[in-house]
Amino acid sequence: MESSEEQKLQVRKLELSDKSKGFIELLQQLTVCDSVSDKDFEDRFRELNARAEDHRVLVIEDARSGKIVATGSVFIERKFIRNCGKVGHIEDVVVDANARGMQLGKKIINALTDYAHSLGCYKVILDCSVENKAFYEKCGYKQKEIQMVKYFS
Amino acid sequence: MESSEEQKLQVRKLELSDKSKGFIELLQQLTVCDSVSDKDFEDRFRELNARAEDHRVLVIEDARSGKIVATGSVFIERKFIRNCGKVGHIEDVVVDANARGMQLGKKIINALTDYAHSLGCYKVILDCSVENKAFYEKCGYKQKEIQMVKYFS
Image (tube, rainbow over all chains, first blue to last red; front, side):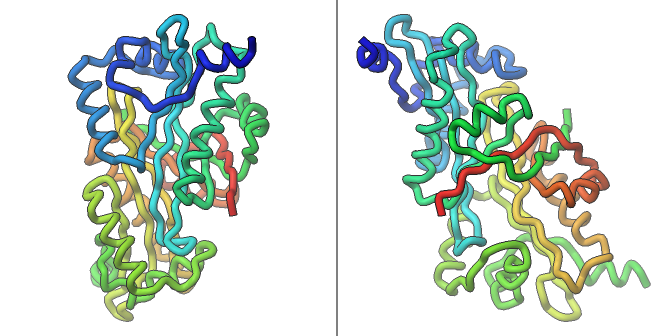
């Protein structure tokens, strides 16, 4: 029973057709995200795809509804420190409000973390609100520094 | 007098020859950074250069000593949120311990911030220790979130 549920909620790479499966509406649950035109979406999708392994957007599609119910992205930073090491940066993680309680957030974080690890990153970092700290601790993350920001608009 | 000092401490892009001007030794003041072979340095330098405008390492060379005395990097993340917006991420900022008190840190941060702004980023973010918070506030940054990390090695 549970494994059949699992099969309907697999993590996979973002596809161009996900725009029509509610991907942008899902991101709108996270933050400011006006509707994106098909052309803008496709342009950005291809830009990110051109970065190949250095930028990965993962999604979970609910096979029953055909809707994207969770997403998160990771990009790989190449450094000189740590013997020209690599660091994974996780961004834009969101689970659909109607799909909470199924551990989809953890599933996405684990998949993004594993991906960065598989590419040889020595660490993965992310910024979150204090309220979300406990969730990321359950995913094996620890608080280290503080995030500073400067907005232009 | 002061403007002549200024002229000797200009911000510029990292060059391949900076390895022989103490660039790696400067990074070693920041964190774990074993000596890097010329080949590894050149490979990483070219990888970053291939990313063109999306990854910029800036340095300040002291024209009197021919040594790199400050550095910092910024890379540009392309998102779907914020109308397919862009975010600048500042990393690996360090000023030589013997060159403190000349506002070189602020000079580097301002240059990295301006660079991200010029590319149309809607914000710039960075992670720092609580001890360095006041410095970044002087550069116009505000604390927002917390940084979580998972180390693999």
